[in-house]
Amino acid sequence: MASGKAYDLIVVGAGPGGYVAAVRAVQLGFKVACVEKAPRLGGVCLNVGCIPSKALLDSSEHFIQAKESFQDHGIQFDGLSFDLGAMMDRKEKVVTDLTDQVRKLLEGNKIDILQGTARLADPNTVVVAADGGDKSLTAENILLATGSAPVEVPGLEFDGDHIVDSTGALAFSSVPDHLVVVGGGYIGLELGSVWRRLGAEVTVVEMLPKIAATLDGQVIRALERVLKKQGMNFHLNTRVTGASVRDGAVSVAVEGEDGEATMDCDRVLVAVGRRPLTQGLNLDGVGVQTDARTGHVRINSRYQTDVESIWAIGDLVPGPALAHKASAEGVAAVENMAGNPGEVNYDAMPAVVYTWPEVASVGITEEAARERKIPYCVGTYPFSGTGRARCMGETDGFVKLICHSRTDRILGVHIFGPRAADMIAECVLAVEFGAGSEDIARAVHGHPTFSEALMEAAHAARKCSIYTS
Image (cartoon, rainbow, N blue to C red):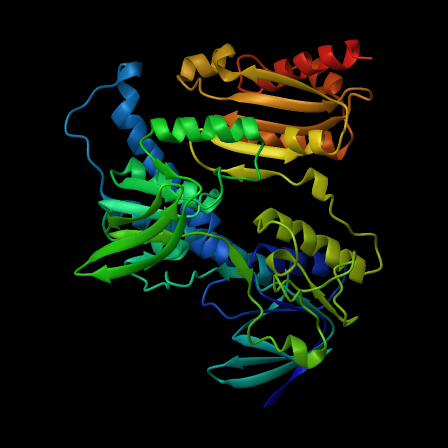
């Protein structure tokens, strides 16, 4: 085994958490190595997650707009069709361009990149298994950022063809006739939207009584209504008990309020969650503890594990599996390593569902405010009331702002509508800095813009907070 040179930090995993942490560490004066087992950098997000799914969502949205909305703008043409292969090629180019940028970013910061599978040999040593043999690296600190993998359901084992995870659903060679999506969360709804727009019958099976269960209840109801209007079918309070494949067809067994039944389809997407990717790291061997129930790595408020020199971030640790959460934690972790204050405000962590219209939220829901007995006010405003939405023909949805009825401090904002993913940034900033609804209401918003709906919702909430004793 070849012996490597000593580093200040070894980052295991080059996803959004790992590569951002590595660059921040260099900025703080660290000598850094980054280990990645996949051929391309960028992790799940850039390779088989956030980026390729958004590329296909955009392509399919352009198609459905051309099919259903362009005529309203006076744009007419005959023989509309799409080339799925070209869509997939474009998706691949987007991924390749971004992963190449990540490599250039690391190389430009003089970060040593090692391709191979890492395991912990001791609290300061990482052994990298690669084609050229094992290599041993030592460092004062080790940051684990290996991400997560899809959860496999008993009876619905992935076969890479008919029963697939999210990665498989990004690479179908043809549009399914009928796609059954097991799980009504963000991933299932987004990928279900892609294939529904391209012509598939899509049925979402969810064991809970509602889809996207972490969202605000009013948003959930509106989202389900619009997705149904777009042609998606929902079976809620329904559990999938198994599936069998025969002659290219899949028979899915379900159990719901009306008893047992079967669904026939040609593809099944299982999207019921993700699990921390810790296998092969030798966590037990070096004393790193994990949660027995969830598998998450146990950390303190500084992102240190039970072993002082080993740190963990992203999908490995508790919290939502979000790329931007991992990046923020990576920065905070290395700042803590350097002796600087580093933390993440999870109350100001945005979440986005890239259906169309989009859903974006930050802070608490109305249900949470009620459950915690917080005195609150709600202001809502529909996008149909804004000039920009009318001009674009995108009038579905609304903005909902929740603030404390006594202090006016913004507790949560929930947006269901066009460009929600971009609009939420203003709301994140407001929550981060403890702004009130008056601050947003008094800020001048450009006209005509979608963001005017946020301003109007803030005005509506302010009336409540001013006049409620």
